[in-house]
Image 1 (cartoon, helix red, strand yellow):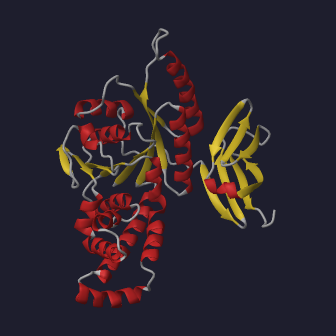
Image 2 (cartoon, rainbow, N blue to C red; image 1 turned 60 degrees about the horizontal axis):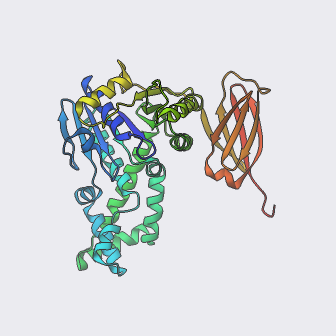
Image 3 (spheres, one colour; image 1 turned 120 degrees about the vertical axis):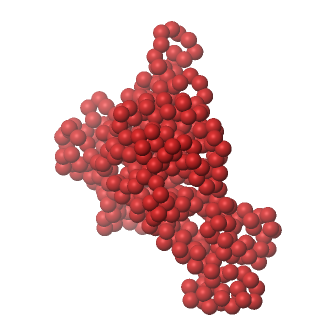
Length: 390
C-alpha cells in the first residue's frame, strides 16, 4: 500500500491535485481512496459528487470520503465521547458546549489517522490519498499522540489502575463509562503511534507540497518543508498549481507574469533536487471528473502517482550535548564558496552571487549558532544553549 498526503497553504488547490491524482491512479488500475480531512470539505464539490463520512464509490477503482469527526467518534469511540461529555457536564459546562468540547484537540486529524490505520490493517486499498487541511493544521499531525496524551493526563490526573477500578464502580452506579472510555483512549494512542510510524516509512508514505507561484505561499511551503523533514516525514515532490501561461501584451497580468517567472525560479532553486511537477492555469473553475482527469495527465504524464519520486533527505537534525546539529546537503560547492549568517529562525547562505534563505525550526531562536563545518556535500551547523545569566 502507498499513502500520499497533499498539503500547502489554504487556497492553493490541494483538493484539486489530490482528486486528480486519485483519478489518475484509478485509471491505471490502482484501487484508490481519497480522504478529505479539511473541516471545510470541498472534495465533493471538486468531484461534483455527493460524499459522506464513509467511502463512496465514484468510479471504477476510485472511492472518496469526507471525514466527520462526530460521526467517527459516535461509531468508533462512543464510550470515550460519553466520558468526555460526563466530565465536562460534571465541571458545569452547558450541554451544547460540552458536546463541542467532547472532540479532543486534534481529533479531526486523529480521525484521519485512525481511519488510515483501519484501512492499512485491512488492506482494502492499494493507494490512500489524503486531501489535508492547510499546512498549520496538517503539522499538528506530527505531535498528535504526545499532545493528546498531555491533554488527557490533565483531564484525568489519576493512575491507570485507579481509573479502571473506580471507573468500573462508577459505570455500575452512574452509567458513566469511565473505564471503557479510558480503554478507548489508550487504544487510540497506540493506533496513532502506529500510524506515525507508517507515515515515517518513505516506502509507504510520501507528502507532496502544493504551491502557487506567489511569495507568501512559497514562504509557507519552505517552512512546511523544514518542519516535515525535522519530524521525519518524507516529502517526495512539489506541485506548482495554476501557472499562468506567457502571452504578449501589457495587460493587467503583465506584472503578475513578471513576478511569476521570479517565483518559479525561486521554487526551482530552493527546493532542488526535489522533483517539481507543474500544472497550468485552466482559465476556469475546476470541478468534475473530466477536467480533473486532464489535470492528472498533466501532472504525471505516463508515470504512476504511486511512484516514490524522490528518496533523498537533504536536511537532518541531530540532538547533541548542549544543543542541536542541523545538516544541509549542498552539492557542487567547496567550503570556500559560501558564507553563512543566522537571523532569528532564518539561515542565510550566500553562494557566489546567489543567496539561499533556509527556514529553521523556531526553537533555534532560543539557541545560539556555535559553529559550522563543511564536509562535501554536507554543511553542519551547531546551535547550542547559552549559559544562564548571559
